[in-house]
Image (cartoon, rainbow, N blue to C red; front, side):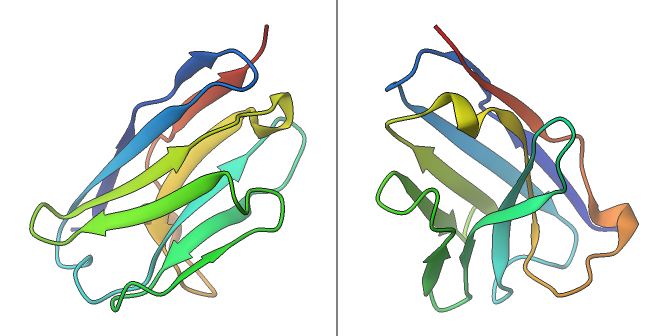
Length: 117
């Protein structure tokens, strides 16, 4: 059974930083392309950053230069370092596989990130 548990969210002021973590269980992690997604109220879920099994990284234009995705295959954990946070980064952040179609039952609860003064 695949399960992803996100943590590390919170309330931060504009310009601040947060580091999100995602613990993966089940047979899917090492060797798979993984990604961070986010969903703001009233918006569709969007892909923020992805990392392949060989550590090739891609980012949405809105977060380039501010966010860094990384992975620790020994710990089955995915990370997202977020710096210079902006109010528009406010959303629920999820980790998951970077597939064109993600099975509904792969989605976890996510972690809330709120950027506000």
